[in-house]
Each structure stands twice: as structure tokens, then as C-alpha cells.
Image (cartoon, rainbow over all chains, first blue to last red; front, side):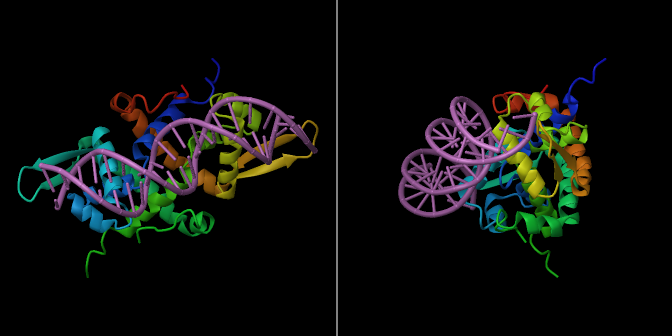
Length: 122
Length: 122
DNA sequence: CGGGATCCCCATAGATACTG
DNA sequence: CAGTATCTATGGGGATCCCG
């Protein structure tokens, strides 16, 4: 048996995950929702540097990807809440790992990424 | 003490990590190198759908970010090898986690991502 | 309050061709 | 074999305005 090139299993999975997290605010949004920030206006207050449109776009994508669910309350004024789905919840540990690696190497990384990362939320 | 908005620790780290992995082929390249595929020509054979230029660009970025090191052998024909740095090696478990999540939910994800993901290496 | 629609910029990355 | 220069296309994301 040949070594089957690169372990497809290794590459593909991470590509899928990257695809799901692809978008400037997605991981942040998931973190927000996980913390109980469920309404669009609250998220916007959380992330002042993100435009409303982009938030909407990315929330739609997250919803479409099955990571979050959207509840519309037919009230006045309008009210919307987002919640994590099981799939979304299962992604949290992954984000947490990325989180920890990023924090562990923050010093080195910020030096090198300087300029690319204008505004970190914090 | 107020709750300090969103846990900065949670968001920032993952943003840094995402930034480092940002690029179509980066995680794949890291996986390649980790598996002992160290020469550009070999990587290109591995990833026929990636152009030479893009691979070079992304390898440069990885190098600049301190994840890999580049060794140039002053021979003829030219020979170059890339190796993981300690920082790069430390990122492998993270990729592995992303990998596993992606594989675990492959079925659901591929349905939804259909179209976005044209060609998975595998 | 929540959500489009439109316009515009720029970074990513593909194709191609050329140099050491 | 390795790397670079141009040109181009695509799409992510910012700003702004308007509608339920």
C-alpha cells in the first residue's frame, strides 16, 4: 500500500472547518452567541467596527451552514434572537483551541501580524 | 466588576490564529511539510490545482509568520527545503482539531457548502 | 429594531510568461 | 528546479441609503 499521497483525511477536514469559519467576524459572532448575546443590536454594540450589513451577511451564512438558528418574534418593535445549534455548539471547543493557541503565542504573533490586524476586539 | 464585554481572551486569540491560517492553502501546506514533503516541487505535485505563484506567496507568508523555515541549498539544480519551526509544530494540534471536527461533520457540511468547495484534495 | 439594496475598494489568487 | 512580474477576475467587506 502506498501512502495515499497526503492523508486526505487530514487536509479535507480542516478545509471544511476553515470554510465554515471563513469570514471576518464569524468566530466572534459564535462566541457572542455562546455567551448569551443573541440579538443583532447587542452584537452590533459588541462589535462597533463591524457594519450592520456584514453582520447580517455573516449571520445568514452561519445560519445557512447550520451553526446557528434564528428566531423571529412577530412583535413591535421587531425582535430577533440567534441561538447555537448542536452543530454550532460542537464547534465551540474548536474555537477554544484556536483561542488558546493564539493567546499562547500572542506576543510573537502580534509582532509579525502588525498591520494586518488593525483592531482586535480588546 | 463588570463582565468586560466579550471575553477578550476568547475572541482575540482565535482571531490571531485565523489570521495565521488565512490563505487558501496554508493549512494544507503545513500538513504537507509536517508529513515530510519539504520541497516546492513536491508540494506542487501534491496540490496540482494551486498555482506556483500562490504556493510561493503563501509559503513566504508562513515563513514570515515564523511557522516554517526555509533552507536554500546552493546547488545545481537549485534545491530548497521547508521545515516547521517550533511555532509551526505547535500549531499542528490545532489543525488536527479542526481536521477532526471537519471530518466528524463532513456529511452535513458538504451538503451546505456544496458549490463553495469545488475541489477538495481528496 | 431588523434587514435589505447599491456602490466601491482592495486583497486573494488564477493564468501566463520570463529569469537564474 | 525555484522564483518573479503582469494582468485580471472574483468576492469579501466597508459606507450609505431606504423599507418593513
